[in-house]
Length: 272
Image (cartoon, rainbow, N blue to C red; front, side, top):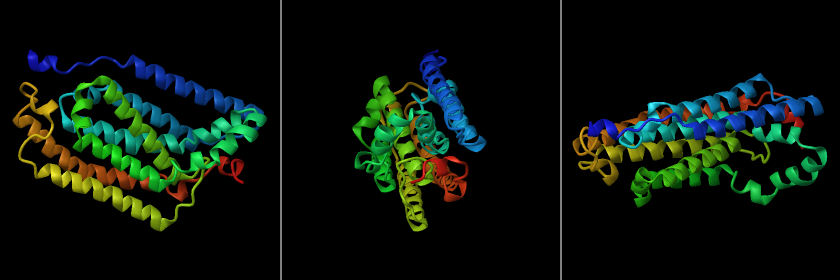
């Protein structure tokens, strides 16, 4: 009975409201842009954006999120999906371009475009900066006191998710190049970033596989069947997940935002 009570599942109405609001804003912007300029990101980008919201809801509306509080493996699955599935699909939806085409011309030309082309926007969206921030956040979720704190504090856990989503979007936005601000990312740089991410997950995965005791007090002290030896098993499973699943997701996301995916009129509309 105690073990069962450790897992609390409730349908995430808060996330449903947020995701619904984002979907309505995107749909409204598409309609307004179509009426004002006739511009459209095309079915591929609309489908990518819709899929990102659907998978985001799936992450929080299924037992994946419910079991994240008792299983490091589920917790890590959740984070990988946010960064390497939800975020790149969201970026491929070209939300910035849709917003620009929906905005009044004066607001777009005098405020939004200059802001997006400013240094304040270009620095955090640079792929090297975004990758560095992503590694910092993901590393802190595994190897700092914040990791245990986020597992037991709902607000910190929410902040963790928000950071992963935002930084993940900035990374894949910079590599997709379908929205302002744009960066020229050469093939060699893409490959280097990909190798860095794969190497990071492989290194962390191997480190977790070699552990002999649970590293996370929040999981180790749970009652059966979650804590103690089971927490160590989950830790080892997480190591394997990062080595195999993390590497595959990096490759898939990098391929999805490769230059070959830049199709649709928004590239021309936002050019210059």
